[in-house]
Length: 454
Image 1 (tube, helix red, strand yellow):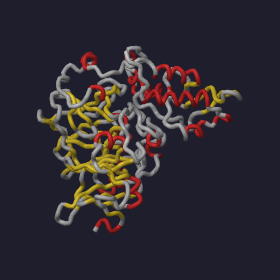
Image 2 (cartoon, helix red, strand yellow):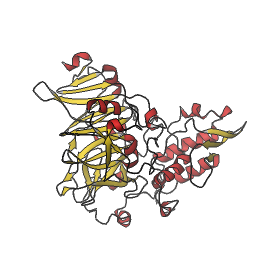
Image 3 (cartoon, rainbow, N blue to C red):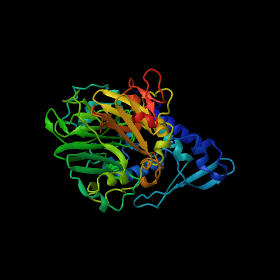
Image 4 (cartoon, rainbow, N blue to C red):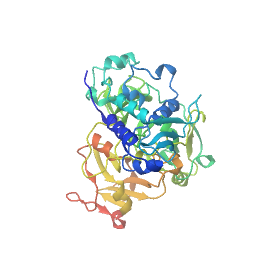
């Protein structure tokens, strides 16, 4: 049995080194955090178990893969952590994190011993190897594992079991202007087909990741993967007909792996392509949608509707369980390579039209306001909060609104499919695609600024 130190081990070692070696003289954790993100947090792990409300049979089982326990851990120790005990020689020994665990005090104490245990867990034998036999035992009896387009080692257990993160299959909507809980700057995925316009708040998709719906007579699945910040809408139609999608609990390149409920084929959310099962090699049709501020949607569609929770008490809608993730230095549960010349967690606007895929860094677009490449026009305007920044989705820093369009040949611009994701994900799934980081760009000039729209 091979012994490995995966990416998780790297994160845990950093947490342990901080906990054991760095002298937090006045216990100012944030000072150390700025130079050591992302950190492994056992407190976040316990919070995750509570958040997903896993059945008792799924808790603390030794035969579970290590990564079962670590999906969606919050990287970093934020300002909510308080040092309760310290010594002159070893610094902070006991931390307090303000989280609620049923049946316990309203906080959990984690110190040097816990960090050492975490290191031991990370160095445990690698029991998380992809194994179709084990997957069948986990309920994947319909999936045809003899057909695949990827290597088994690329699949990781993300944590929750099949449908452990429940999709929304009977979505409920109200008039957008009647909604009072969503802040104007909160991000929503918006879709307009025919005479219908709907908004799907990230504050809800954060906890469900998939919404199966029908808009303007078109069956769609609205998807969001927090670890990649990828928001993509597909037509939920395969060669077998209309279907619905659910979550597998698996990840590939830190991205959500979905499954269709007709054949239980596994599909990559970032590309919409089937990777394991009967329909391997097929690709879902991507439908142009926007990721924009709620206020922008209401302005464009005063009569539009917005998704609301079927049960508001089911999850802490509006809270961001990935606090600080998009300011981390590296992604979580990712084992691939990074693109040179750009930070892995930098935001990238990925424009998609069929097999034509290219990226523009959000930093470039934010500075220029408008970027044009051929017939494509991408614009940026302030006013949208990052969903993965602060404790509350509404409190995230302003990352702006993006619109991607293409000249239809008649002097008019129409929306095209795009996504605002992280650089590591763009590189993982489109390593050969062009990424514009400056203007003009050598070899394939692009135009930027006010004159780009002409």
